[in-house]
Image 1 (cartoon, rainbow, N blue to C red):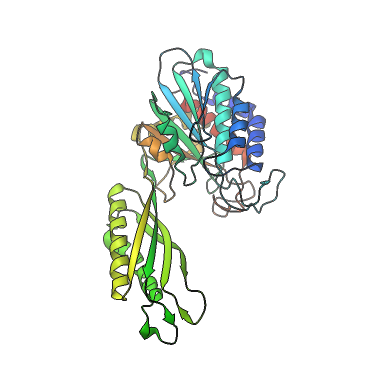
Image 2 (tube, one colour):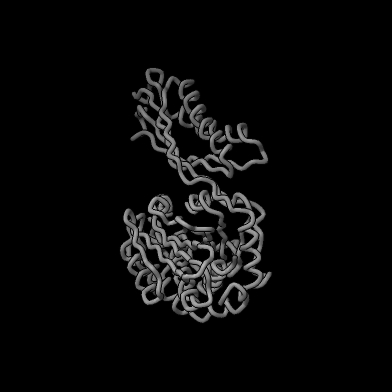
Length: 395
């Protein structure tokens, strides 16, 4: 394969190693690891890459893997990224490769990302003599809330990189279908917690207390109302209170009430507005109830923004290797978040979604990513291998 060979032959080559791709995916799926420390997953990756002639570097602060395919000829350096970590979730769908560890599951498809990226490394290494430039394979831990990409960026993974590309699978999309869009693709995601401080006492005498529970209830309502009154209707932003805690029994007014949730948006201006107004509403509502509060916001991933020309390139490449019927432009960004956003803040690039809806389901009914019943259509993975490979070959 070379710069002039972007076509169906790449898809055929990807199909030719499909059994190896699936085998690696199942091995990783059965042995999920969490966060930034994934030694067994790292070992599986390095073993799969052995013998390909790649320059492999293991992470210092995490169990990341960076593998370079250097052709020794002038050309761009293209980074391809696959994330490695699983979720703290019990897998409840039985199979021959169900998670062997209670409370851990590859419920977001990162096992497929790793195996597809290894497949692309094999195809590209086999064609090294016809290639130019360098391909960098970025195997990243800690995507699920641990900012793994930032650790790898700090260790130099983007040094010399000209552009970057990543795939994320989704069960709620036709199997094998590639989808992306220019501009904002995924949301920012910030975590917040609010603790309302009152004065506890007997439930029969609330007038002797400062009850934090009504303050909490009205704060939740006020936060949700605030979004629609702070953000222009044509801009996307949301606040979700997802966890509340207060009290111990039926006849005690507690001294404190606590809640936490997420703030999401598709642009940084909206993000800043929601963060500021969240604290304002919480403090004002608490004060109206004779209580005080403490609002804490933990900054999360920024907005994932595809570069326009790179998103267009994904569509062009998909048409050439998989056919026009396997590509669609997304009508809007979604509210999920991704730490590939950090990569796209530094170098031109794009992320695309690959449909992996199970054969016996439809995209509208399949268990979604992050579900305890999430399943993957492994037949679609060869399209991901082909797309990773082809995105490294275009100029």
